[in-house]
Image (tube, rainbow, N blue to C red; front, side):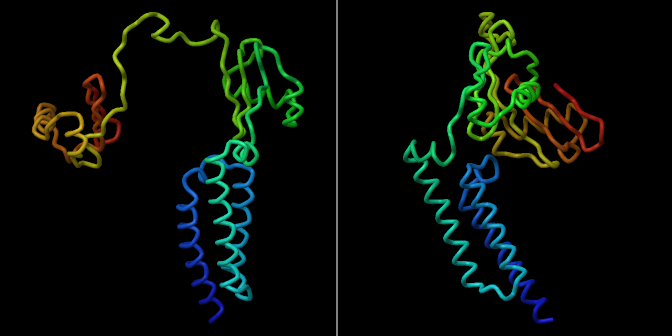
Length: 232
C-alpha cells in the first residue's frame, strides 16, 4: 500500500513539474520541433515515466536529470536566437525542391525524399502538376511551401486595382450569454447600443451564445437554440 501511495505522489509531482517545464520551454514545443527539441522531448518523457513508476529510482537524481535536459534545451534555444549558424545547425535549413517548374533532384536526395513523396506533398497543397509550381521550398519543420506560377494563382483584389477596405478580425462582443465590455470599448460601441440592437431582435443577452462584430459593421448572432443564427 505504501508503494502505491508513493507512485501516486511521484506521478502528481512529475505532472506538475512537466507542466512548468513545458511553460518554461515555450509554445514552440507544442508546435514544430527541431531535431534537438525532439530528442529532448523523448528523453524528458522517458525520465518522467521512470521517475513516477519506478520507486527504486532516486527522486533527487531524476529531478537533477530533468533540470539538466531542460536547461540544455533553454540554453540552446537562446543561442539559436542569437546566432544563425547555431540556429541552422540545430533546426536545419530550408531546401529548394522545385524552381521554375523544374524538380531539383540533388536536393531531394540530400533530404532523402523520393519523387512519390514530393508529389504527395504537392497534392496535399491541391497541386497536381509540377509544371504549375514556380517555387517549392522544403522548410526546416518538414512542411512544403509552394508558390504557384502567376497563371495558376488565384486573382487578388490588388491585381484588379480594386480599392477594397481592410478586413480585420471580428470582435466577440457576447460570449456564453455575457457581454464583453472590453471588446465593446475597443470597437467604440456601448452596452446600451448592443442591448437596443438585441431588443429590436426581440432577444436578450442571455439567449445569445456568441455575437461577433465584423469590420464591415455586420453583427452575427448565434443563439443557444441549435440551428438558429443571424447576420445583420
